[in-house]
Image (tube, one colour):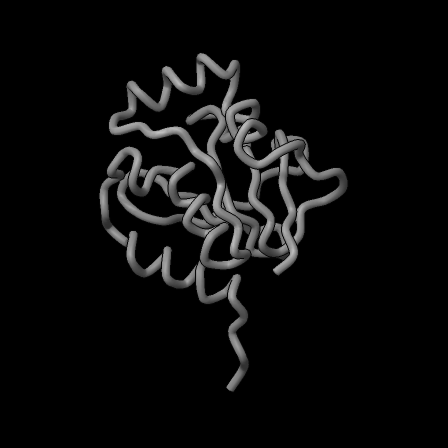
Length: 135
C-alpha cells in the first residue's frame, strides 16, 4: 500500500466532498477551493477578500484587473518555471475564462467546476500564472 502525501490527501478530500455538488460562491468556488487546498496541503493561508455570490466575485476580479492580479494580491508574485505537483494556478479554460486550478502532477489539474470536481490537462500555453509552495 502506498503512502498518500498531504497534497494527495487534500486533492482526494476535495474530489470526494465536491462530487455532484453545485458551487457555493465564497465557500467552494474555484478560488475558495484553492485557498482551502493551500491551507491543508501547504499550511499557507491566503488573505482572500470575502464574497458571497458570483457577482461579488466578478466585481472583485474586475476591481483587481484580472483573476491573476487578484491572486497576486493574496499570494504574492507568481512563481517562475513550470508548475509542479501541489502548485496552484490561473488557467485559461477558454469556454469559462480564467479559473483557479490545482496541479496534481503529470500535466493533470484539478478544477472546481459547477456540479463537482473535474480533472483537466490544459496546454502549457493556457497556464496564465502559477504559484509553487513547498510543504
